[in-house]
Length: 232
Length: 364
Image 1: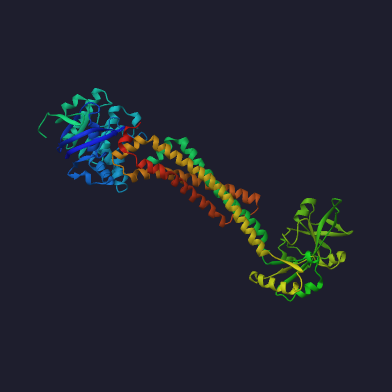
Image 2: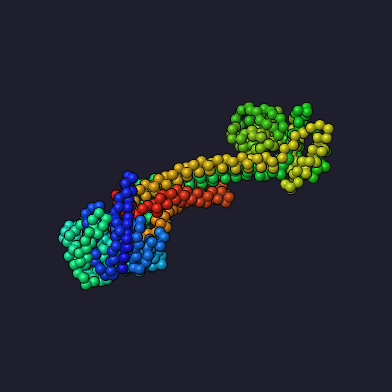
């Protein structure tokens, strides 16, 4: 599903070149649940950005769902982000002006513009909220009227809107208390069981309970990979 | 959907930007209507005079009046020759027991209709007309009596003076009455040319007849004057609209500022949208929609206000009516208003669409 070959990424910081990623090789299979862990500055966010097609590596190649990312222009890259990848952020990043349902509708608007009827769009968004296990009565609530856990569910529903095969989660439990965080991880696991490939960047060691593999990054290289469950 | 709410989020700021557009469009449109009304009002006064050629004796060559012979010479021309006499004299207004000066004109009864004097009644040898200025100043009404050289005349009608021919503060007598008092010299001759296209021909022929040896007369035709008045009025309109343009420019800067602040404030939001699949075009459209809403709403309000203001000014101050021609200005106003807001938001929209999503996501 995701394949990284010899990925290198460096930053120029005040004249000094810092390697965030050095020669990363990684294969993530379809329906796999992978956690990427490591201390701050280990390069895990950079890795996630590269997998998420927000950033391009200096060297190396990425394939997502068999598509060679290097060959794509910016618009095509946008298309990959829209159709293949669902993003879940630590800060939820919901749009405060829009209610829960409308937040979920946004990716649908970007994808279908006016070719999808308003009703159909609404129904799909409701379907996604249901998959994210948010009670329907919150559909018309605005982000500031929702708890952190509820907001994260809306953001997961938004990630599911265009039915992408991959969910990329950047510290999805980082802003939540441990109990709520656990519920979110359970939801992600359930989505994984239903066919999504899930990649999580996290500090949270409890993720290990849910992941098939935990990849440890240190100073831009993969220091260890622990496989918890080989049956993928 | 989002555009409207973003505008509502900063309702005060949006309202100020909107106000800028409203004022700009209103200024352009109402000044345009005003200019158009001004032009129309003046043209109305002159329109009936476009058929006239006015001849004055040339004082530089020592001529100060026309004689009967001059008039007869002009009768060869294919036009109506209207000799007009003029003196200034004391007028005694009986009802008010008041003495004043007025310009006294003498004209043949049958010629009055050609001079665009806006009067319908007929002149006789025992009646006079006074112009509206004279009537207003001295509170004279139809039926009042005035004395000229101790002979009493009934005021039969009131007319509006017409530029270059019959001046303000004037009294009109029949030619016969005039001759009784002042003799039979003429101060000017007006030629009424039925077909405006013949005016140049008539002028050339007049020149040949009258100015053979020396430049005896000065020839003035109203079409030239009308044209130069139109030119001036067009410039006035343009100038007035220029002022409107400046206020619209300021409004544009206001909108640009609102949009630019909006991009800075919404950096993170833009980053989120880009990461969940918004293309550059989506982001640009979002910003353009916002300013389009401001532009359209502001322009429409501005135009409605300007139609109201324009109507009031044109109707009550200029005493004329809004012409169809003037209605182009509200249209222009909307065009400029919407155009300005779109142009002003182009840069902010472009800037927002080019944000790096990673940096944008990190910002707060």
